[in-house]
Image 1 (tube, one colour):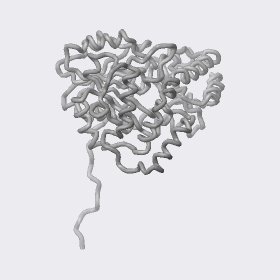
Image 2 (cartoon, helix red, strand yellow):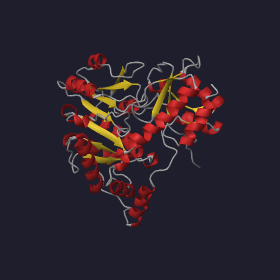
Image 3 (cartoon, helix red, strand yellow):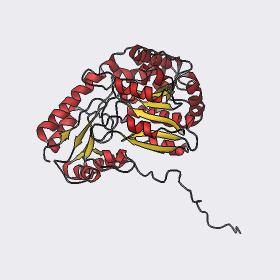
Image 4 (spheres, one colour):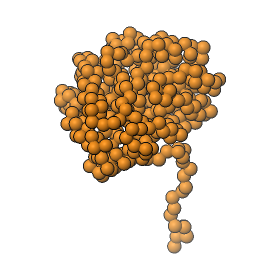
Length: 390
């Protein structure tokens, strides 16, 4: 007869004690439960170009269903390198400086794991995308939080300069910015370039909304600035650009020595990325029109939604310069906190939004919430009808 004790699961000490269920999951779950219009989580509710789906089917039928090369198929890396050079004027080697990733979130954690050592400091500019801080924690780094200017969400270079120390390993920047929808200017990029010039600080540049910049402005990729490009991992996303967020395909561009380290991690945390999707994207990128036309596509949606908010609600609209987000000040509408307001709005009005406080480590509340306008026109109009009740 066995004398073994009752089977038990060993206790685990979490590596991420501050992490729970994300606000996006919470709000999307509540939106589904209440049959609310979900303008919270950032994904389209419309279909991608049917041609892209045809290209995937053709790739599968052609037998592209086994492992591709670890850094991505050559045709897609060639297309990415050609696009970057055409748009931003910098030449990256498709062989040694471009890697296809399983979405931008995987790209970011891979870059962090490649360069951040235990005790290294990494600057994040708050409010920031929610994966940055846990990624740094997993790498054993120390998060250094520097706030963007409240209200305008512009970079505060005095505070960034004050945060730089001999232990600073990297800074993560994001333009167009999630959640605030601000876009860095050429002058701001040059100021960052000058600030970092005497240092060995790396840059992880989250540019997933690169093709969503409005009102005639241009996206200031770090690729445009030699002093930044030489120290940067550029991260972007096909899911955002081509309305296929569920495909989870992105890419990273970086100088060859940085990319060599990136690939060492990439080959063991993902190894490689969905083969038929890569072939389809390479074929689809033959035409630049889909991403060249994207700013006008989303600007029209922004304008439709913003005009409705201005006409039907008492929200104060913040300027949406890029991305597919519109932030509003709720001060004239409610005395609730941002988080409480978003819960109330979902339950009682039937529209889901995201509180900006969720993007701050200390939950800083400035009475601002974020809506996503990457939706069908009828979805936006339905949300506006409900918001008119406020």
